[in-house]
Length: 406
Image (cartoon, rainbow, N blue to C red):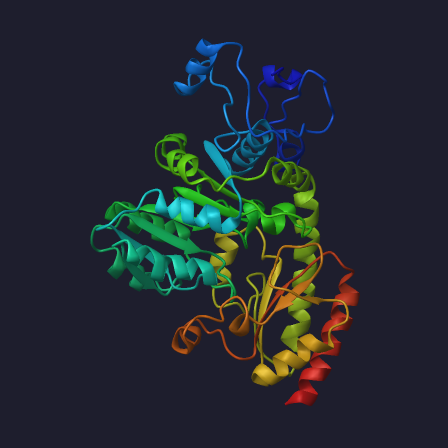
C-alpha cells in the first residue's frame, strides 16, 4: 500500500490535526477520504506467500483476514493511538466488547480484580457476576475513597478497573493515586475514559496501563454505529489482547471503522460545543428548586471539583441531577421534554436523557443503587449540539412538569 507524502516526514501534530490526518493510507487510486475495505479475506501470489503471511508479524507483515486486521480498521487504530498517546490500539465491535476483552485477556481463575463500585450496568455485571464464575476474585471499592483503595490493594492484585467520571452519577477517581497503589500491588490499571473523552483526560499520563472507549459515544457522536477501542503498550496489546481478539472474534466492521474515522475529524468541535452547553445546562439546573442536587465536574459544587480541575481539561458533556420528587417527578420531567430525547445512549449530537434506576442500572439490587446514590429521582443528561437557549427552555418545561407531579 502506498505511503502518504507526509509519512516520510516526522510530524508533530496537535490534536485537531491528528484527528483529520493521522494514519491515513491511500490506495493506488489516491483517494482523498480514507478507503473503505469491505472485504473479509485477502489473496496471495502463491502458496509460499500465504505461508509467509500466516507465519506471523514481521517486516513483511500483511493482512490475512479481516477478523485479524483490516486496512480501514488499521487507520482508525493508528489515529486513536496517536490521539491518546498510546503505543498501540485495537478496535472492537462495541464498547462492551472492548471492556470484556481488556479484562478477560489478562485474568484467569485464582487471580484478583479490584474495581470501583460506580460502573456502567454491563461493566458491573462483568466484574461482579461473570468474572467470579471463572474463579476470579472480584473486590469493589467506593471510587472516590482512597482509603478503600489502599485497603483493597494491600495485597497482590492482578487488575484494577475504574471509570472516571463514572456512569451515571459522575463520581471521580484519582487515577494517579490509584495507579501508584496498583503498581505496588502488581496490578495493571484499566481505565474506562468514555465520559472524559480522549480530549479531556489522559489516563496513560496519569499512570494507567490500559484505556478503553466505547467509540459509539463521542467518537461517532451521531448515533450511527457501534464500536470500541482498547489502547496501551504495544507489548501488552500484542501478547495479551491480540490473541484473545483473534480467537474470540469481537471484530469491528470496516464500515463502522470508516464512519468512526469520519467522526474523529469533528470530535474536538463537537465535544467543545457540547461541553459549553452542558455547563450552561448544569448552571440552570443548579438554580432550580425542583432539583435536589446537580453533579457536574465543571461546577465548584461538585464534591471532587479540585480533582476534576487537576486531572481533566474540562468538565464533560454529561450532567447528572436528582429531582426532589423522586421517580414520579423524574418521569414527568422526561415526558414533558420536546427537544431532548429519552434514550440510554450518550455523547450524541442530540441531547439525550435517561432514568438510570429503570434503564441502564435497572438490574442492580436496590441496596447497590442506594450505595451508588442512584435514586428514584436521578437523571443522566447527555448534552448535545442544540442551541443552549432551546435546551434550557426544554429543561424549564420539564421542571414545570416535575413541580406539578410532586
